[in-house]
Length: 209
Image (cartoon, rainbow, N blue to C red; front, top):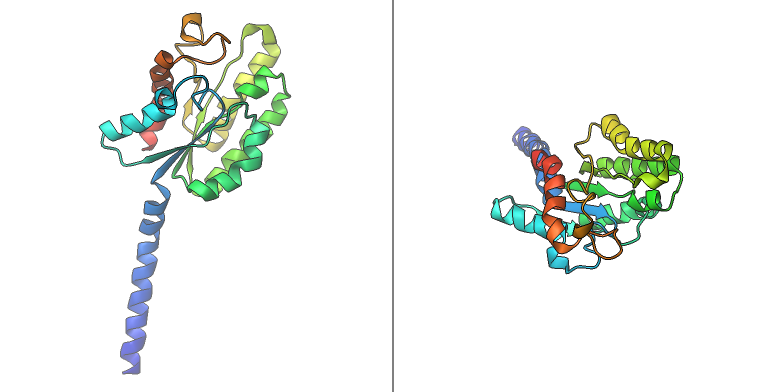
């Protein structure tokens, strides 16, 4: 009787061990976290028109079963993002994190090395939490000088290579050189430009789904 009990316990333990990877996968792949700044927070337009909301619609239409949590904050720098990443990951437990920070660092002329360190910390935190990371790059206007621009832009490709991440090289690709697609501040795209932003992110995101 005792040997039968031990055998049953061993069988149950084996079943639990076999089930753990599947359970972890199911728990970790339900949410896409958008982690960015005003460019991802639908600044100046209706929330329903922002590319984050359009992503929800595309997933639904394509029958892809993911929730989308947009934790983007207007004005956010990489430093602010690094300071709140752990609590945000704990709150949403995303299977995928779309990291779209850095624009405000560049616009403020903050040290690129500091931005790189912050983005690196965010990536490592997300990966450690079991979330895949899709990196979204940015570029700067030419008035920031060629050396700063080059160092800034190379940061994203360097991190993508270091951690083998899919990357959307430039969030504003196809939009950045069209003034008519921006609000009066010439910084934030209008509603009709948001589908292009989504397309830019989608190219890197879709293979991860």
